Amino acid sequence: MTSDRMEAFTDGVIAVAITIMVLEMKPPAGTDLRALAGSAPVFLAYVLSYVNIGIFWNNHHHVMQASERVDGRVLWANLFFLFWLTLIPFVLHWINERGIAPLPIAVYGIVLFMIGVGYIALQRGLIAVNGADSHLAEAIGGGDWKARLSLLGYLAAVGLDFISAWISIAIYVVIALAWFVPDRRIETQLKA
Image (tube, rainbow, N blue to C red; front, top):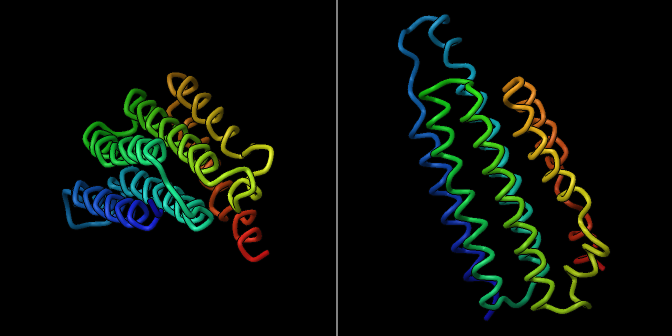
């Protein structure tokens, strides 16, 4: 099976997740700047979530461009990845309803961690089905240290959340910033 259908399906699911995410946002209660400022934490959580989904979509696009074939294992890994990714609007809605509170912020980190696990499983599955000499295998090489560090960061943020939700949010932002520039290894490999 080629990778085109899976990539198109993933694009559609991600588009729906982003749409649901913005529809879940509540407008400010008033019409002045104070009311707008009161919505700032939720808006910033939306921006962070949008950026995270964009990062995962961008990297998904790159690994799919470096892959020619998929199999059942890859399809299930992709569904696992998408399952967790589609929970971002749910958690964002919870944060919208309850504010910057420890448990919703911790669950946000758990969701990001599980998306990362799904992405790594997808990457490994694609390498297995496309072979050790594939573009993706050549690009990833000995491993993906940034993905592993991100998973550790998410776990640390979940643990630190019960000390301060803002520390966790700062960790989520730092991880997003680290991923903001797409992985150039795949683009470089495809040009070779």
